[in-house]
Length: 125
Image (cartoon, rainbow, N blue to C red; front, top):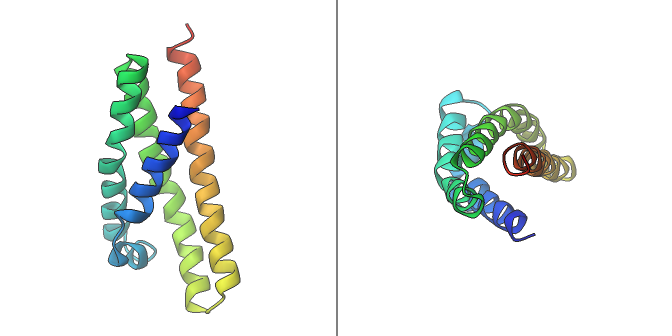
């Protein structure tokens, strides 16, 4: 339970708190800004990497979890940011926020699924 809480808190910090307005608005139109956003996400989420490595005593579990989720974050934001920016430009706030929520749902499913699959692979052998 504590592991999932840490994963969600660090994800929130990495995806929202440390994201600048320029990243938020630019990532839908520019691979440069999307890459910068994901780079910041990757840097902040190293906290979770360290937590997993220490907690489970397995650096491979932590590294695979971290690298897979950084890649999935890039792929998810590549698509969802384009849709959310379209709703923002159309001033369709209802679907803009629905899409933000959907984006977070996808991220959280990825974070939790990869954690449990990798934990089963590396820890429960």
